Length: 189
Image (cartoon, rainbow, N blue to C red; front, top):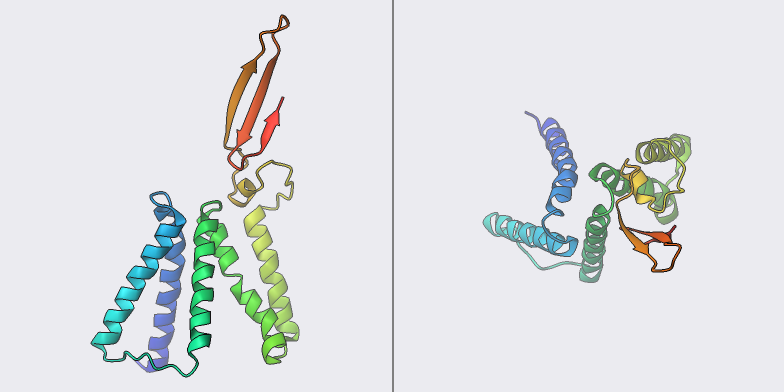
């Protein structure tokens, strides 16, 4: 197999593995908080990469621009942490769509940062991809009147809530219904 085909197959495999990470993260978040989970994931990744670098004798701490590499590492770590925290509230598929909007950000930022031409095809691609994200995450239901709009992103229109009934000791026996949803919004009827 020539190196180009091998590279394409490895890239497809990486995309598949990357795609499976979102459901895996969602499952893992049922058993531990987002901060512990992202820490353990990066600790395991660091140990594996250290072992690979030591085994291949390809380990070096000599970097031309250490500050830039450190900054990029911290930025990437913060992005992962935000992804894990966000996945507590949205479905794996919605999270995958939002995270992979990075392709759109790259297309929009490269003209500003690198003076690359956006061009008509790229601009149309950005618009079509954003439209696709809107369709996939909202199911074309734009009524955000629920006290919990995140449920629309999940594709679920039911509200997870706790209801408390309060009765007064007054002669007319007034009953009030107090509802608190999982975002902490209170409704009294």
